[in-house]
Figure 1 (cartoon, rainbow, N blue to C red):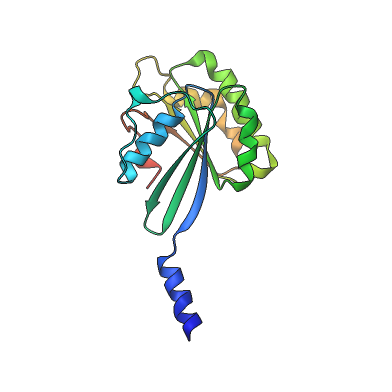
Figure 2 (figure 1 turned 90 degrees about the horizontal axis):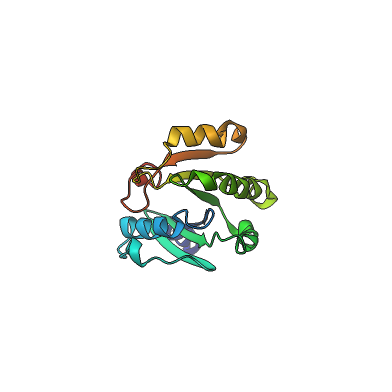
Length: 178
């Protein structure tokens, strides 16, 4: 009888935990996104964008909603740090890939890094969320044009979503975290 009640209690009160990688090349806005998500979906105040410095290594953020815990791993995107990304793949349940939509000159580098991520065997079943960030900037490439440039139809086998966002003001966040 105890095991029945314990199982019921555990089912009702235990939160499922999912680990989500936040990847993208340097200066895409990954850490800004993480800080905004933390401030929007938890009682923690995120760092203001003007106090965020480039990530060297890893930032971790936790968000809880109903019976789910999301643990975000924001990994540095400088070329020399991308080689450590794969050390986190095996533990990841999903990938958020952030692209700086206001810097078309770096799209090729970003796409190349994304393709390398998607080819890794440890992430074959992981859902993917691609974010066209910095939509608040006047020079940002519109999300539809960026989606065509990315040729997303080649991802037909993978569960994925593409969303226009602004990490600084929260534009687009309510469509994918809820």
